[in-house]
Length: 370
View 1 (tube, rainbow, N blue to C red):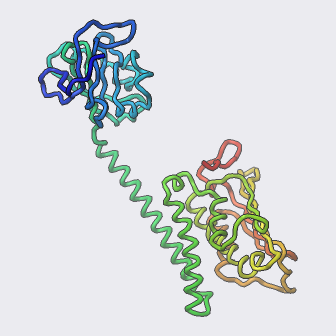
View 2: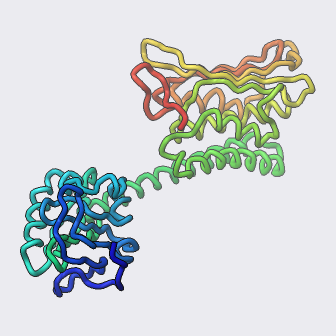
View 3: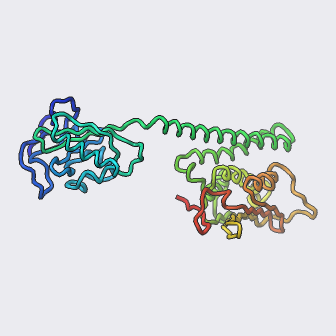
């Protein structure tokens, strides 16, 4: 192999901006799939940000791909060397590519065409320039990405703007509702401030999950939602707490409402229930039930080791009970129940799976956690 000389143009003097390496004249060796004897890509070829390729002129097979093109094609040069170039481009553009390579091999100037690589969207074109190296045995190609069509960018911006406006309106509505309900049941400014702060903190914990790029689109993991809220109350899964259920990824609105409900249950358990007593325990279980109208989520929060309430006990109709018995079933299209049995509180939610998750399998199974 010849030593690499200082970078020099390998194309005729037509303004083609590629410094690729050097080539020594010599016959092609079709049996080995090699280019002209002594051809080597130079440093610019390897370091260029644009996709670049060296192609054998006689049969249009790959000789060299630079790292930028390897990334575009999600492959490696070694696996393509000697293979035809056409299959790596969009089927509708292969005739244009063949004509461009033929023109570049016979002309004294470079040829410019717009092509799409295999697997790219229809509007994701690149401008490719092809020209022959000094001895004519190698064709050099450089791809320049084109700016995405204005119409597509505008459509994406409109969709993002609409989604943002919807989320902001939903957030303001929840905060306004929490503020009003908390004010109606607080006996003092201090209690109002503390309770509202706790509820906004619980709501913001869900919002932070929705803002994560790997979570917002896929959904919020129900188990993680419960664990994070209990962790905020200094409770972890263990001897006093059991969390059990199949993987379930919640839609944003379902995660917001259910997150507030779990906050109210956890807060009550710390102040008055299982987590406020030495021997108290709690179990959070859920499963999917098949019904004629579609799969249902059956969710329960059960506390143990809590003294039975006095005869005639009626739970206070505060913000927490309002979220559990009215807001939650209304938001999820389901039904809820709160019982105070001899061993502690039990909360049950049943709601259609379609209001909780983005999609289900044909058997009603919810999407698994990533």
